[in-house]
Amino acid sequence: GAGVSQSPSNKVTEKGKDVELRCDPISGHTALYWYRQSLGQGLEFLIYFQGNSAPDKSGLPSDRFSAERTGGSVSTLTIQRTQQEDSAVYLCASDRWRGGRNEQFFGPGTRLTVL
Amino acid sequence: DQQVKQNSPSLSVQEGRISILNCDYTNSMFDYFLWYKKYPAEGPTFLISISSIKDKNEDGRFTVFLNKSAKHLSLHIVPSQPGDSAVYFCAASAHYGGSQGNLIFGKGTKLSVKP
Figure 1: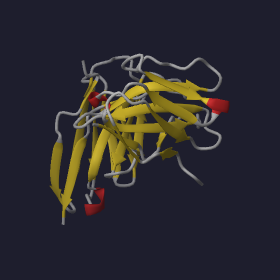
Figure 2 (figure 1 turned 120 degrees about the vertical axis):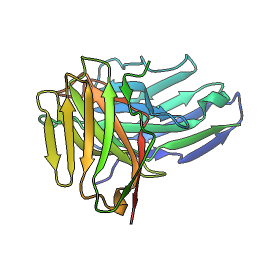
Figure 3 (figure 1 turned 180 degrees about the vertical axis):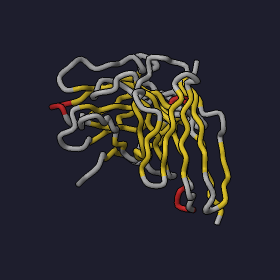
Figure 4 (figure 1 turned 135 degrees about the vertical axis):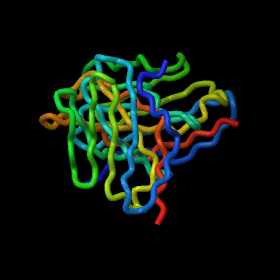
């Protein structure tokens, strides 16, 4: 079946512009996560959606970052007034509870470069 | 402050030998640990996991060992194959048993298996 998809795969933008990154999770997965990986770093948690519950936004680095999940499926991560330090690979993951195993399935990521 | 640490950024192993990747954690609330494998330009893929009630979990050539008293886990790959060459991420969660939260990742160890 189809995995997690993300678009665009690459995005180059100028400092100060807004960007939107899209994630299509695996159908039927109730949880959706956004992470980012900066150069030489591990994956950094940004935000987590679970069903209809309020999202866990504890990982968002600043108020320039926001995310929505419409209809419990597709999610959009928005970065306003981008800065050079926002350059990273942004990864989306989804999962569902499977009796003793909580395994997150990742998309290929969006590589964001802020000039 | 890093809660999950992979102190070796890289590891080189001869084909057929054992690869041992190490991971340390600081948060005693973590009760579920996972290893992900990542190839360039792809998202991480789940490899193997272990809950804190076990000290070993084996899946084919991959075995994960957990030492709770030392807050240490390791991934053993034997025999190593050139296709195992990738970046391996250790991850931990304090929410075993469902889609209840994010994973905390280490910075990764790049494994190179030489033919």
